[in-house]
Length: 119
Length: 333
Image (cartoon, rainbow over all chains, first blue to last red; front, side):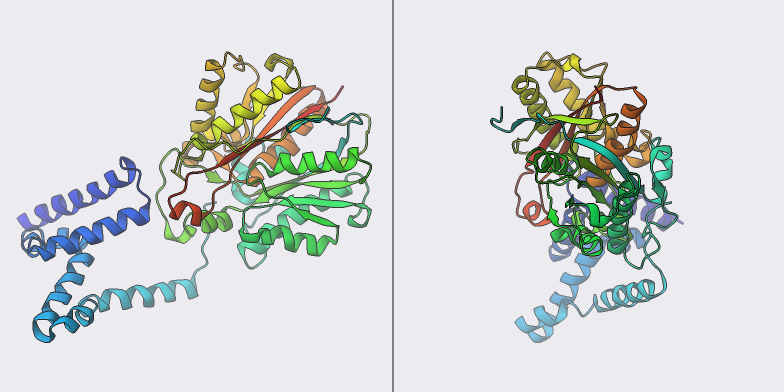
């Protein structure tokens, strides 16, 4: 049960940071997104993101920071096996499912639906 | 007397008629009753947003011409603009209407810059029937300047909502019983260094004040001479700054100044600081303001349309937002 609470709080706090970057620091949505991804990537690089996932579960894997974490994670794992080239190939190894899903579902939605403003 | 952007039109070119079209969401506007045509579909029943955009400008042009029993073949000049790259909606509209066309770009200040150009051509005897105006379509312009609407991006409350609307005025030589274009002031680009594209009102307010001051000084008039001073699309944020700047300059505009953008959606907070877009000032000026002048509510009106002259690229390269405001004075006499 406690994992639900920690997931809720940690996920919420990451989102609060995003909202503050947007509202207080006046960054655009694209800047906010990039900063969160890079932060996740750096946190994994120094080994802090995995413990956060262990602690908060989906609270740490659902926010976009987790994408940065996955990029670094894949790069480091492949680098251990294949050296420098592994950094390049590994980056998208873990994240490929997320990227492919985004493209596929984006495509399906674009085929079926037509964007509308509000009425 | 033609000096430093201060224009006086001796022959008083007149606005013989106007045509205004708007999208379905614009039914929520308190000006809704004044629009000539409101579409059920935001793309004007066409396939793309940009096609719908062009159709809105074309329909507004046809409506304006039909009110004086004229057809496109009677028109001498088409002076229109919009905010899409290379103004393709205006270009396609001009292709369809086959009226000699000068594309006009002053961003959201195009309603007035095109009106001034129409008055100049008429004053110099080069035109007897010029169509002036501008339009904007929400989805097309959001994609152009911000994010595609399907991205569902959040916006702060200083941001404005691009209006789906088009307004066209037919400028003719002097005609009795309709508003006349008596004076104008061409704006200077004012850039005080703001960089937030989600707060255009704050960027544009100083430009509106500069043009107001130059107009009053250049034409030796007072702010109290006008029944109405209406800025284009400063929105709630920008208009508040504009009024504050007026107070500092010791101008009393508390009783006669209004902003088309702030009022366009009835100050509904869902629309953030209000409307923006080239169609915002065009639609309000050429429907509500024009009709009220015809009714006799206002005799002397000063319209100050405001525009942000940024591009998505200039913003990405960290440039500031250059802004402009053009003023035109209309009287019924």
